Each structure stands twice: as C-alpha cells, then as structure tokens.
Length: 307
Ligand SMILES: Cc1cc2nc3c(=O)[nH]c(=O)nc-3n(C[C@H](O)[C@H](O)[C@H](O)COP(=O)(O)O)c2cc1C
Image (cartoon, rainbow, N blue to C red):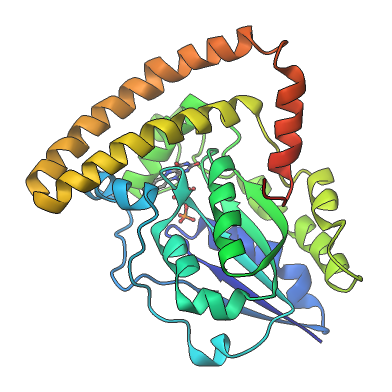
C-alpha cells in the first residue's frame, strides 16, 4: 500500500479541480491511500479580491514573509507518506503567502523530510522563477523534489492579464465583456490532468522517480515560452526593489505604505503595457545569438534540479 498526501491552497477552487483530476488514477487504485489536506491561513484572504487587498499582499508575497496558518491536524502530520503532492499558486512571482508560510513552518519540516515531493502549480503563466523559490524551500525542508507539473493560462500574455483581473476581482471565471477568452487554466487542461496522474502512478510503484520528470515533460507537463523566463527575471528585479521599499515604509506608517502601493500599481500598469513589449522586441532581436542559452534554460526550468 502506498500512502499519498496532497497538500494545497486554492481560492477559487481552480487548483483544487486540477488536483482532484490529477490524483483520480491514484484514488481509483486499491493499492493507494490518498489523503487530501488544504492549507488554510489563520486569517483567510477574501475571494473575490478588492483592489486594495490585492495590492496589500504584494510586499509580503514577494519578500516571502510568512503569516500564520492553521496547523495541519496531528493525525496527518504524524504519518509517513510515500509521496507528497504539493499544489501551489503564484502571487507576485513568489509562492502564495499560505504556501510560503507552510513551507517555512514546522509542519512542513516534519511532513516533507526525506519524502519525495511532486509540485503542481496553477498560475496565470509567470511561475518559472517561483518554482526555483519553491525548490529552495523544499531543500530547507530536506524534501526530495521528484516531479513538477505547471498548469497555466495558455492565451497571450496580455490577454491573460486582462482576463485574470476580471476573474480575481469579480470572482467568476467568465468571458470578460463576452469577447475575451475564459480566464485561467482551460477546462480542457483541467479535465485532462489525470494523464499526469497515470504517469505518477507508474513511477510510484517503480524503483525510483529518476525518469518521472522526463516522462511528465514528454506528456506536456511543463511547456515553457522562453520570453516568459526573461519577463520573470526582469519582474523579479523590479519587484525586489519595490517590495523592500514599501515593506520598510509600511513598518513606520500604514498610510505611507498605502500611498506607495498606489504608486506601485501605476508603475505595474506602465511595466506591463510599455516595458514588457519593449523587452519583447529586444528579446526577438537577440533571439539568434542567445539561442543556445535559451534552449539550455528551457531544459533546466523543465527539470527538478536546483542550480
Ligand atoms: C495576489 C495575486 C497575485 C498573483 N500573481 C501572479 C503572478 O505573479 N504570476 C502568475 O502567473 N499568476 C499570478 N496570480 C494568479 C494565481 O497564481 C492563480 O492562478 C489564481 O489566483 C487562481 O488560483 P486559485 O486556484 O487559488 O483560485 C496571482 C493571483 C493573486 C490572487
């Protein structure tokens, strides 16, 4: 019998739906016992979001400052698992606050130690460097990352920016103005998530997980658009400056924190609509000389290795 634990945090339920399809081949197998546990912050984040709260979580999300979660129940925490599946979403190019807090807390140190872990993320599309942050947190927990599956919105980057705001602020995954595509991960990708569960099951009963990530990638688990690596790197550079400043200012004055968050919001709009297209043009112009490097990067970010 193999014991599998699924841990995740999802607001709209999108990641929950992805995971329940992904683990269905495991749940159907009589030799698997699957436990699903949600990670819950002590102070829940409102969904749908309002503009103010959405901005307020920026500094702590990006700087990976933990907030208290409700402890994992003892009957789950005190068991040893053959495999843990960790489902996370991305907030401001970092793991969401509940997931970051979990990974930095004692529960994770107990549960994940010496345990194979598969990460499953459900984001808009900017998850690549967040996965590097998760890899590092997993190393701190002495966990062994053996697989990763990334679910994203496959529409154009700027289209997904518009539609995700409609979804996050309105709470419904509907077509904005009736003309934009549905936001988030497509129904097709959500419904077909079980194909990754079938691969995971094969390796769960195999000798080790050495070939797992290769098999997942071959099935399309980690499609990487090279420009998004560039954008993620630039975004991290910019966010590191803004978040540190806003966090520092906020320690002395909540009013000034709010004021700077408002500036940040305008800057973000400028960055998305002016800066990103310029970076895209530069990326296209330098694509050929950087071709080998880009191919190497894609291979690395599809892997479970940590540089
Ligand atoms: C505050 C906040 C910030 C987000 N930042 C990012 C981001 O930087 N990159 C990204 O790809 N998605 C981002 N998203 C989208 C989430 O990763 C996720 O896809 C969405 O919130 C739906 O997840 P759910 O399953 O919790 O409902 C953000 C969402 C929120 C609420």
